[in-house]
Amino acid sequence: MTLSIPKLMHAVLLTSHGEMEKMEYRSDVEVPFPKEDEVLIKVKGAGINNTDINTRIGWYSKSSDENNDDGSWSGNPLDFPIIQGADICGNIVAVGSSVDKKRIGERVIVRTMQEVPLNQNNYSSWTVGSECNGGFAQYTSIRSSEAFTVNSNWTDAELGSIPCAYSTAEGLLHRSMLKEEIVFITGASGGVGSAAVQLAKLRGAKVIAQCSRNKHGDVMRIGADQVIDRNSNIIQEIGKNSVDVVIDLVAGDQWGQLLEILKPEGRYATSGAIAGPLVELDVRTLYLKDLTFFGCTKQPKKVFTNLIKYIEQNKIRPLVARTYPLKDIKVAQEDFLSKKYIGKLVLIPPNDNI
Image 1: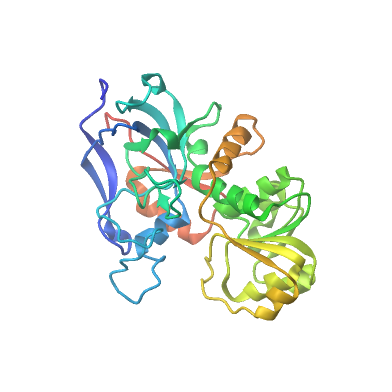
Image 2: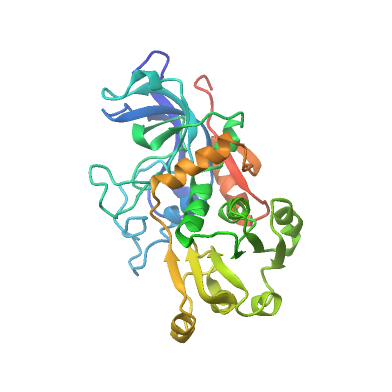
């Protein structure tokens, strides 16, 4: 370790799956010591994402077991207590024995969906804030290969809003091979949806977005060409066989309509189901229209390096709605769940002397 790094830190510990009382804000958590291939990051900003809440409540579990032992990204039991936080922006303050000391001082963001350690051909998920500790703390240790240097004049909160939402959005567009086509994006006012709007426009696509009526103006301002209300009949608004790609973060009762608006040989990509994960599929629509479905979780590194390039060239802009001190994580998550904001809510850990 290097000088001036404290032994204890402020952090939020998730003690088990459950409601917000399972999160404990502590000031006596040991600062991690970086392993051989790791860097120690002083966290400056950590955005809030659906996955933080889904992991906490065990939403990913498909079993009827009240313990939600399969409630993680990987489907394996989590090793509680854990430090959540899928977004990390900060500065490297120490390095492991096999990492170049010149990395100390670098400003970095961390890839959320990582390759599995020691077995990069293994599909299993390795997710920051789930399979390893994340950003809801003053310090975190991350494999050096997953901490990406970024040269930008954005604030820490702005950079801390990027990793999870924007990599998810970029992954969806990468997998669905979106080009200068017509794309329909559900949940367009949220973190991933608003990122997808911007990233789709970078590809020259025409963007039709869906969100609540009071957020239409905001979504138009970030690049959408057309916005429809989330409660409207999608087929009536858009028309059958009218879009090339659907980027879906919502699922729920309207899901069948998304397949109807796709053109023959259209592509559907999803990484979320905030309106409900169980949907009804008419398989005839799938095969008679020659549709292609993409489930998008695992991401190649190119997805994240693309984001770094977009940031450094100012081709995208962060959407930070509000910041909160780390100790106010419960208030921040309540605000997140209220869906009052467009863009991201970001937690700021305290300085060492607080």
